[in-house]
Image (tube, rainbow, N blue to C red; front, side, top):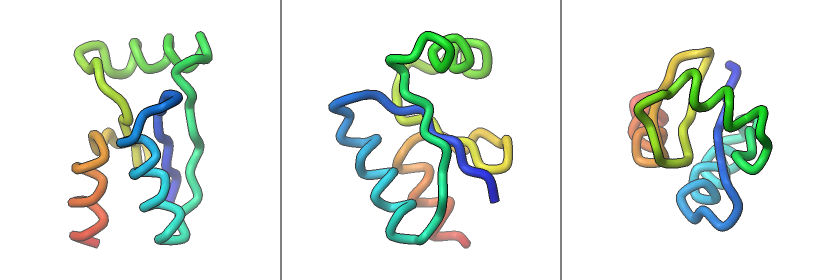
Length: 75
C-alpha cells in the first residue's frame, strides 16, 4: 500500500493523521506544502481543495483526516 499525505507546519489535523498512520504501522510519503513542488502537485491534482491534510492511498484520493479515519475503520 502506498500512502501519500499533503501536510503543513502547525496543522493539528495533519499531525493526527500522521499519528494514526504510525499507530497502524503504515508507512507514508509526506508532502510538505511549504515546498513549492508539493504545492504545485497539490494544485494540479486537487484544484478545488484548499485544506490539509489531503491523503492518497495507492493513487486514489481518500480525503482529509476524518476521511482517513473512516477509510481505515472500514479496513
